[in-house]
Image (cartoon, rainbow, N blue to C red; front, side):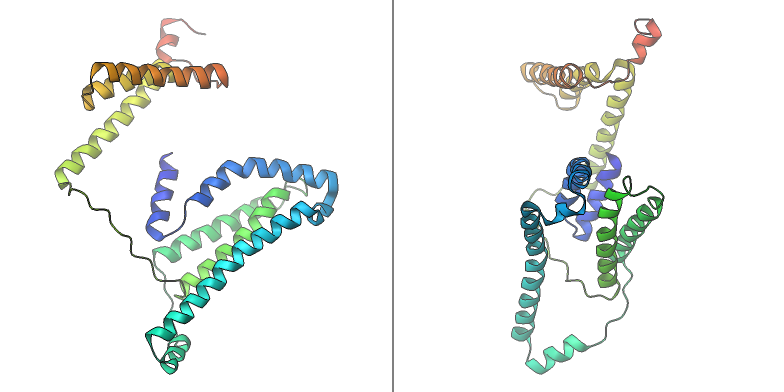
Length: 255
């Protein structure tokens, strides 16, 4: 969670969209399963089926339309900002190499895709089908983005409109950060000692009363609601095998 939070923060700072990453994490196992089934049932011929052709056309349109629209918009902005001669001169003027944070991020992505392809070279056709299907276009796109960043051909970053809000003094922000880290540590220790479901009940109650100074009815309702959700959905409904509470192990209640 912390690693993906850091990745999301870096992507936000560099202007990379985060929804595709989330979609890839959620739909990745489903796509791998369906790719196996399609290749087993139809071989390579599944690419020529009508539904697949429609999806490929939608994907191609989603890739080409933004590129064409961006080039047209850039050409119109150049013509509107300066005379034709100076615009052509600006387009043809040499650009130097740029190795900044965005370039480094693109390079890391290319290295990761390349490492994934190299690691899957001995998987065999069946096991390596999905890594190759994802890694080859991923590596090509990462290299293309790296080349754009390195040559300075990426679009200028859009200025984000900051929402108006109260200024937080540095000491208050520091204190809030320390409190946040403290309560995360309390929650992790409680999970280890009491188990996930009971830790949800106890830590939610303590946080709302001590840190949030919430009223008793709201504190009790939220604590019981969180406990009921975790226990009912995850432990009973989905059967998630949470580790046993260490305190119960010490007292001999569990094996």
